[in-house]
Amino acid sequence: MNAPEQILRIGDAGSKFKHWTTTEDAIFREIYPQQGPQAVAQRLPNRTLASIYSRAASMGLKAPAVSRRWAPGKAKWRTTDAIDAEIRRTYQAPIGSGEVNDLARRVMRPRWWVCKRATTLGLITPRFKEPPWTEAEDTRLDALTARGHTTSVIARKMREAGFNRTETACVVRMKRIGIARGGDGTEAWSATALAKLMGVDSSTVSKRWIPLEGLPAKKRGTDRTAAQGGDEWLITRDGLRRWLKDHAQCIDLRKVDKFFFWSVVFN
Image 1 (cartoon, helix red, strand yellow):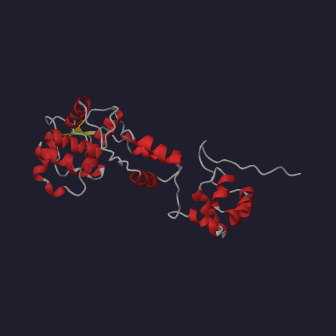
Image 2 (cartoon, rainbow, N blue to C red):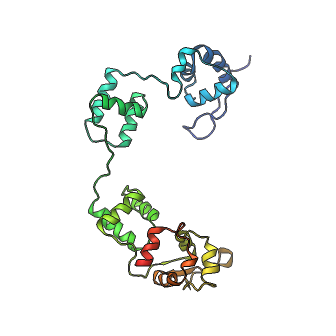
Image 3 (cartoon, rainbow, N blue to C red):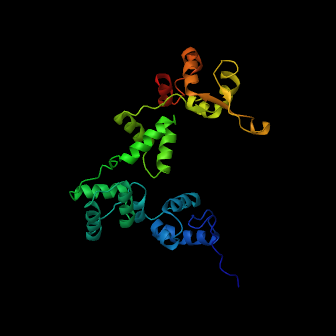
C-alpha cells in the first residue's frame, strides 16, 4: 500500500510552498469547482488566496458563482460588534501606520476597510505625523552633516544610532534648524566615494578628472596591493571646490547629489 504523498516545504521556516504536489492538486480539483477558493485555503492553510487564484487559472478551473465575491477588489466585508469594539479601542490612543496594519490583521479585514469603518464610526483617522525631534537627534544630525555625508548616508547613520528618521525628514530638519552641510573644508573622499556623490563612474574620477582634468588629489598612504586597486586617492573639500569653479563642463547636474554639490560650491 502506497504511503500518502508528503507535502514538502521548500525554503526557510515560515516560507510558502513553492511547488504544488499531486496531493494538493487532487484536493484542489475536488474542492475548488464546488466550494471555491476559501474552502481550498482552509484545506491547504499554507497556500495564500493569491496562489490559489493563480493555480486555478493554470488548471482551467472556475469557482462557483457564490464564491466570486472573494475576487480581488470585490469582497463584501461585513462588520461585527466585536470588530467595531476593537477598532474603537485601538483608535482611542494616538496611533501610527504600523498599529493600523496590526489592527487590520487582527480583525482579518483590509487596511482600507478598517480606515473607512473608523470614519463611519466617527473616529479620527490618524495622520501618522512624525514625533518631534529631540536635542539628541539634532546633535547627531549636526555632527553627520558636518562630515559631508550624503543625505542617504545621514539617514542610515541616524537609524544606526537608534533614531528612526527618513532621508526626507533629515533634509527637512536640516533646513528648518539651519544646519549647513559642509564643515571647515577639511573633509575628504576617496575617488570611489566622490564618484557616487557626483553621479559618475569611479574611473571617471581616478582616470580622467585627476590625471587629465587636474582635480587636486593625493594618495591616502594605504597598503593596498595592485590586485586590490592600489593606494586610494584622497580628494579634499577645498580642492574639489576650487576645481569645480573652472570645470563646470565636467559635471552633469542631473546626476549629482544636489545637497552635497551645493554644500561644496557654497561651503
